[in-house]
Image 1 (tube, rainbow, N blue to C red):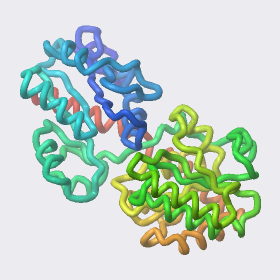
Image 2: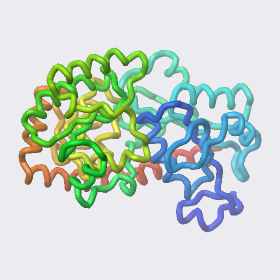
Image 3: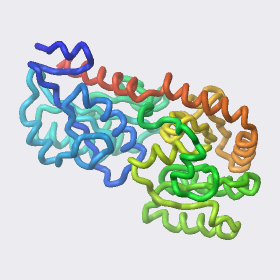
Image 4: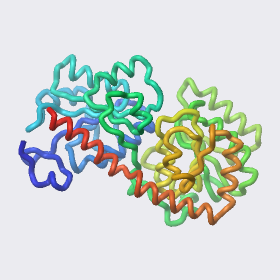
Length: 364
C-alpha cells in the first residue's frame, strides 16, 4: 500500500487520491439518525471522498443514486480490496447486502446501532450480515454481539454554539414571548410528546414570558395523537403559548436551539438521543427522562436534570426550579457547553468510526 503524506494529517489516500466512502441515507424524512449521519459525514469530508447515496444531508455532498453507487463500486478502490458502505437503517442494510451478496460487488458494510433493547428478528438477521457494527453505548453493544467498537454520538460544536445574546436569539426566531422552551423530535407517544405538553400546561402559568414549542413531525398514524394534544392545549387556554410549528429545516435548527432557554426530552424509550447534546453545545441545559444516554450527558446534574420515569409533574417542578434560579441556571448553561465540547464532540466520534474503517481495510 502506498499513501501520500496527507495521511499523517488525517486524510486517507492512495497514490494521491482520497479513498471513497459510501454513506447511505435512504430515509425520506430528516430524523435523529439523519442528524447524526450528517454531523459525522461532514467531519469525514477532509479524509475521504464521500459519496452520499440516496437523500441529501446538510453540510454534505450532493447525493448520488443507488444505481450510481453500484456502478462506482464495481471495481475496488486503488490499493484496497473493497469499498466501505456505511449504513444506519434496515433498508440501507438490505441495499448493502444486495450489492455485496447478490451482485457480488467488492463492498463491506459498516452499521451503526443505538438501540438499547433486543432487535426484532429481521433486524437481527440483517445486523448479523454486517462486516462491522458500531454501537453508540455499551448498552447498545450488549444487544449486538458483532459490535467492533463503542462510539458515542457527538455534536458539531462549531455548528451549534451559544448565542451572544440568548434573548436576542429568541426574538430572531420569530416566536412570541421573551424566552423559549422546546421539545424536538417526532411527535408520538414513544417520544413522550404528551408528557411535554402536560408539563408545559402545568409550567407556563408560573413562568411569565415563556413560549413552549413542540418541534417535529407527526406521521399519518400519529395525527390523532397530535390532534388530542392540540385539543388539550386549547382546553387549558394556552394555544398562544404552546405552539406546534411542525418540522424545522435542519439548516435552521442551530439558530432555534441557541435561542432556547431549556430543552425538554421526556421519551418513554430512546436509544441515544442527540437533541440534549445539541442544546448543551448551545449552552442550553435540559430536563429529560431517565432513558437514552441522558444521565451520562448530564454529568450528575451539571448540565441537565434527569427525571425518573419522565414524570410530567416531576419535570414541571424541575423546570420551574431551574428557570427561577438565575445563578444555578448560569452554572448549568456553562457546564453544558463545556461538557459538549470536551466529552461529546462529533470530531471524536468521526475519528473513532474512521478507525473501524481502517481496521477493516487493513484486514482485507
